[in-house]
Image 1 (spheres, rainbow, N blue to C red):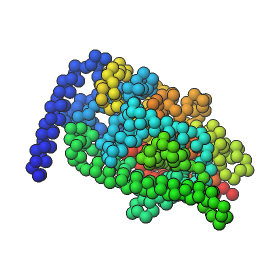
Image 2: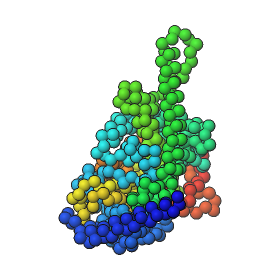
Image 3: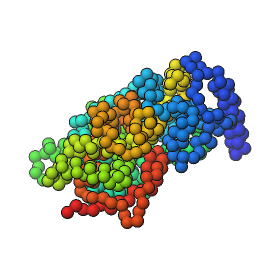
Image 4: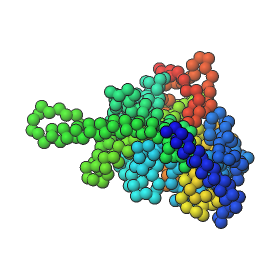
Length: 504
């Protein structure tokens, strides 16, 4: 059995080598739309994988360094797959305005195919698929619409105050509970509490696995073998997660049935708690009318929970790190908050989103330290795509290096410095939605992050709550390290430690 497996592997690698050599000849010939982008010379089989070493393990740093040598539209060979990397504002503008539809598919990692997840998730489905359009429409209209967000505002404000008390230990855990409470009215620690790990740990494991090097992504011909076993490993965790979410849905349906029975009964002894309206209520209402399936409900819950938590928690941590690094900026932000709130004891969402300097701090933190520095890779689905005079081959992966784009010296003065004031004069011009292509922390175009409406409310709320409740300083003897560590999210290499001082 082992001998057969080795022979199959050798045959597959031989076929891969033939495929590679064929594409080398094709590369030198160029295409009808223009020549392929420049890039470092690839080696047989491994392509440019060795060129991605360095950068402290931060891929976005390495890609930015290579782009400085080869240009803002650059080609890489990653094993037997081709990638085109976009690293400037002008190239991003051309890509998103002229070719958004042709580049709006996703490059799906093999791990995301586990348990058939990529075929039902709006994160991975191609935008041309009717299922993607339907799911995206549901999320936009019933989960992240102004009405739905307003309905769950009280929960978010309550959880933001919880983070104030617990900030020394767990901004991330607090944000996870905030998102989970807004989604299905339960803290994450309560979901799957009878399992060994619980929902939070399983979701974290799945997200981290996506960043693991996987031979199936580099050599598509061996993908069916799942040589490293990552797809099987991830499938087991997907099944556990969806079993937990299934229990959450069952519990909510049972509670709704009990509420209905209680309201139709004349007995005064019934005391069934009525949950506030949350995202899950909106989804179950659509389920009851047959507009979506139960599987749609659980997949949307997973997508929102997995994608939303990192964006909010990591951005808050980066903003706090930069404020501690720049005490004058922190003082100015606190002065604005206290001037606007007066004698109010707590911060509410409308307070936070109406503070221009605080919003400038949030934008500047996102510009310097985007949570997703290379966004989620796109895939070219059509011939004839051309960016910066270079052809983008059909089927190739297209990577937008948002980190490099948002530090593009052609777009930003002193791009590596933390200067929130740069956004004050452009408050209405530069928003979160990627319309100005020098600022794309949530992407742009058809694949703009659907969770943006919640993030743009919650990040200012949490940050304002932290700054309103406490003064902040670093622990004695601690030097602030703002080095980055990138896996699936761009986080502080050394987790932030800060001391909250109660204002008297």
